[in-house]
Length: 298
Image (cartoon, rainbow, N blue to C red; front, side, top):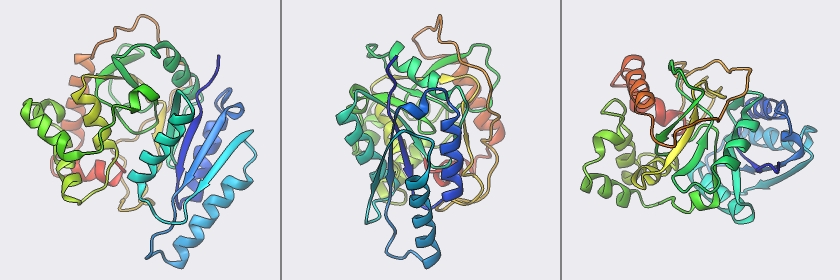
């Protein structure tokens, strides 16, 4: 089976980047595939210490020995995470039919790569499915995988046909959600302020590609596949990232077994959506829900 290339976005966290690379390399078959790495450039206000970390992160990529086929794209200027990801994913999906996308603070299960590639092949021609996701909130669910309406951002994959549906204009997305009276559903039954994130994107308070990706897929009634046990762990919740503070509310333990994709109903799981809504409500206080996702790069 041919495998999809991996796209990795890095900036100024050499230790986190190393953990991400080493976990990926532990996935069977990943080292033989293509790894494209996009390194964002320094901000004009970058301190000497930040410049040093940016340099160290890039040097680690240049000297790592895990992957056979690696290409590093180094930006001289700071594009910001949103523009870096939008431009990077677009450019690689111009070359390839599909891709797996990670950021520099995501550690994967040894079965992440198999899960992604198996799902990309299985649903390649199913227009209802827009993407595959690797992270899942720590909920109790009795099936190995399920579908949700929309799209997500912590270890994901898509096809060229899926990414073509991405809408950059947040104002347009907001208006359509209002016109179709979808704000409540978009916010997981009012338990998480995704709509407010979209408004902050419009006002310039945040610069998020992911909220626009979620809204784009949600409005097109597209589905994303999730594993019921997360195959991705975010290690960036330690306060090391831009505008981040330490947080453990979305932490998970990685399973050490493969995910079965047999006998999946290609429809949104209302049970899974309900459980995630309940998790948001019980475990993430109303005041801090928006801040948690924003500071984690959503």
